[in-house]
Image (cartoon, rainbow, N blue to C red; front, side, top):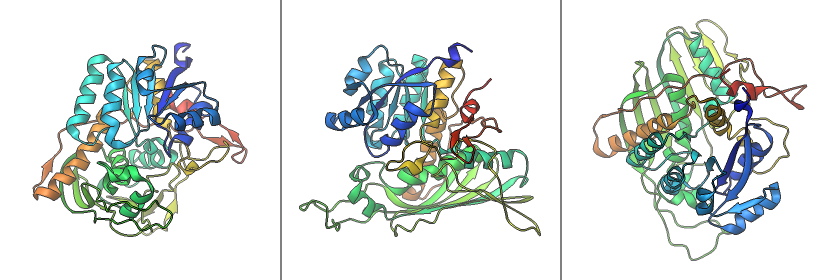
Length: 395
């Protein structure tokens, strides 16, 4: 156990909007992580983060790759550069945790999985909300038979993705459509609850051409169109036999309707928002009133750290911390490359089916072992940290 407690020396690459909560959590929440460096192609952005959070080393990505003391890299760059950054770090002998998605094509993701395996390195991929209190509680409800055998389900999310891409310009590139940017949380949640998908049938529509409309943006921008399908409506047949209807609509308004409901032979489970760590689950049995399920796990998205933008993402980085424990304990990490690859394969199958009209079969497989229940994020009314990190260790 002495080795399991040794911190994993880690660098973050990418200082965009999600980096604040990652940096704070890596420094203050997960004792297994030693955050030693930060990097961004915009050095000024990296230097600002380093000053804000007291990080001693600001490096270029090339310097991160060349640093022998850095064991693990957390990749927070935009999706369309994930393949290049992850490959660079794997080739340099670094374990890599990446924000979603692993790459923008299955071909690239497979290459990364093969490379990691050949080099004996760990590869992990978000979304890690599936390790949070909400989805782990939902998984336990299913594993203990609360709704019997899952027969079907519905998953829905909507946004105005083209308007969002005006502010968050990285969304204008490959991987910026709603299915890849937000729908991936719903795919990841469904996979964590129901296992691998067998086949997909889908219909889709592209994003509209968007002209600038926000007054505070710089003038002179030409209209743009996010590449790929921004609306996807699909049926997913899981290997378990469950049939789930999925709708991702990025061509509507920013009044998000997040729905994730599973129907079983003995009941109905309404799963909380999978883009959060604290989505409330409710159970509905025949001739009974709907009732909420108390959390059986920690990492509910709430912590006692000083607030900053996007802190509603709460315990972002739990997947990287769990992978760090896996590295020290010599076991597979839960949200590994196979999980990230299958998430991407399902999204790509939806896109292919919508474009060509055929039913697309999925070939990759994965499994996610649930975290142990009974550990919580806080106590004394949320004012103090509790023992949730113990759930990340397979003791």
